[in-house]
Structure formats: C-alpha cells, structure tokens
Length: 365
Image (tube, rainbow, N blue to C red; front, side):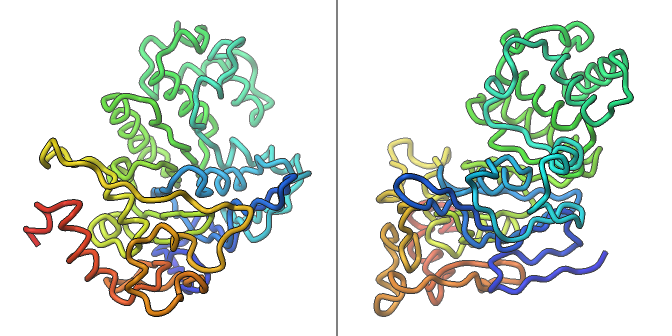
C-alpha cells in the first residue's frame, strides 16, 4: 500500500494506508429565510478498507450532514456543497442523479439512525430487502431476491429468517429492526458503510450485540466503516481512528487510544468528562460542558468553542476569540491533529482536567 499524508492545514487526518473514502475540504451550506446555515466547513478525513472511523460530537456538529453528502442525500436544489468526496477513487461531488443512484447502496450504503422510520411500515421486511437488492441486480428474479433477503437476515442474526422475512417492521423489536437495517445496508456488498448512530435508544446488551455484529461483518466484507455517534464509549469499543467535530468543523483527530488517553482539545475533554465513571463515588456528579453551541448562521471569527471553554485564559490576549486555530499536529506522535491555541494542552489535561474527571487514573499516572 502507498502511504497517504495530509498537511495539517488541510484540516484532515494523516492516514497510514491508501484511503477508500477521501473527503477533502468539504463544505455544506443551506440557505434559509434567516440566512445561510454553515452546517459543515472545510472538513477533511479519509478511511481505508477494513478500518473504522468514529465521528463524534454534539447534535448539530455536522456529523450526519457530512456523511449524507457522501451519498448525495441532500436536496441538490438547495444544498450548496463544495470540496471533494472520492469513493474508491471516483469523485462524487457533481454526479447526476442517475450516477448517484448507481453508487448509493451498491458502492456505499448507510444505516440510518431511526430504523422504524427508515423502514416502510406498509411493506414486509423481505420485500424491502429484495427491492434494495434488485435495484442493483436488475436481472435477478423475485425468487433470487427473496433468497438473498433471507440469507442476509440470517447473516445479521435474525432467528428463523425464512419465516421472519414476511413480517412487517412493527413485528420486530428495536434491536431486530436495527439488524434489518444493517442487512439492507450490506445486501449489495458495499465497500463503504456509514452507520449513523446505530445503537441509539437500544439497551446496553443489544448495543453490544450490534457493535459485535458490525465488527464481524467488517472482517467478512473488509468494508470501510464510518460510525457516527455522540457516545465515546461506543467509539472506544470499535473505532480505529476518531474524528471529533464541533460547530461543523473538525477539532481533533487521532488514533482511538491516543484520543481517549491523551486528548488535546478542551471540547474533547468536555465530552470525556460527561461520561459517568462506574468506579467512582456514586454521589459524584458528572461535569457538563457549560453554555450552548454557537449559531451556524453566524459562526464566531475565532475558535467556535471559545465562549464555552474554561481554559481560554491560558492563551495570551484575545487569540481564541479572534483567530480560528488551524488543525496542527499534537504533541504526542504522528497523526494526532488538534484545533486549539493552547501551548501545552497535554500538561493541562494531566494536571488539571484528569484529576477532576478521573482521579483514580490520575493517581496511577
């Protein structure tokens, strides 16, 4: 494999293998009656086959918007999309509707967040799976499409798939419906799978089963996976790399272990501090991130997290409020990028933040 490298100024991660998906300087804007919503700004990242990229951030940070742009799911009459999206070396931005339909579900597929809303309530599960298969296999007859639907239901762990294939979505539990969505996403063996919060509203047992299933299927199909979530616990379980987004921009990127053990962006610290620690005192309160995200209609000129950051006083002058920091290398190794003006964020995290959010871990260090 050839080695891919990206300059920090591009705002994206430096990969170690040739990427299957390569997003470069992606910007997505939506005109509204109140003005232009800058949903995603100058976003770059890449994912190789067999690898999982976890995209994490608050609601409204641009996670789903950026991923929907990959599959051309935004209304072309209103969405303003610039930049480059290459899937398997093919430029996606600018493809017409017919070309996008040929790619969507075949080369790249998406597992949507709300399985009950994504599945049509009036049609049987098998019919919907068969339709997804026949769109890209027009020569297949109904029997072949049904056999493929049963095969995929069995592969994702649906019991008695030959009979359940004729059930309606409401006859499945939440976890089973999510499995059906995974089956639909993989029915045409796509090389890229985008999972948009696939474990939302599922209990922890079913959530673990879904994550294990995704990992098993990735090993079988060697797919590149983008996992969108707000849960860093899920990211820790399955992701190879992590991209943290805030206010439509990337703010930190690195290997999963590196991000979780040595984060260098105060927003990432806030996400980590909001996770309950089962080993701590049960009376210990979680530490929320103060304030609210900025308006995407009028984003601030400097760091978007500056109004909520409790560490901005460690940066001289009003640099955080007036100048947008570049994505630049972190202090602990190649591939770790951060968007922050703090001079020594790792020291601040080890000395001030970690003792507050994980005192036992701080004592070990």
